[in-house]
Length: 273
Image (tube, rainbow, N blue to C red; front, top):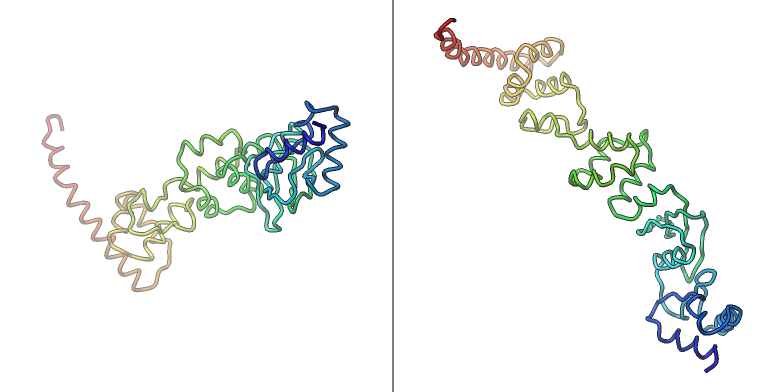
């Protein structure tokens, strides 16, 4: 059997869509003979060129990720194993190799050189999310965007990527996913929904402005009545709101004093008091 016949048979035995390398056929003849045979098969339309030294049987569908992996296997470069689709329809593949673009069997694959950490991030879905946040940069991200991207991740999932992302992004994710003060205090609503890092006095003002008794009471239990009153005195409220909050704070103060009287009485009854 001639080398041409052997290569044709070997190609026919491959599964549909398999990418063929000229190195696959070197046991059948010299490198020059293999290259010459593959060139003739390409000229006659039996195979199509995917990249230098890589081919696929004519008319068979090959997806872009498969092309990217075949090129990387041939060159030895490391890839982000989950390529990133772009709005243009091109596929961007993070790589440890050179940046270049390959036009191949109906696909455009752009290999984009990145650091080893970024290549590792690009290999998983969560990693690609972190890579996108990193690429956008600290100045262009909001706390809400970070929270929407990472709030459903477990602590273990976040820790798994801690060594691959910059310190500023780790800190931003931790801050964005920290328990909200409104939840910690037990408020009925997320007064801090738009700002997880809201200052205490601003949160107190927001709650007083809504003047729901149960929330005002929880503020007083958490921060203490004196602090809540100080914030109340510094803020200007509508007359009805001011009157309502004033009554609430007065009643809460009285209630706390009444509740503390039995405790003081017991303390006074102790020996040595």
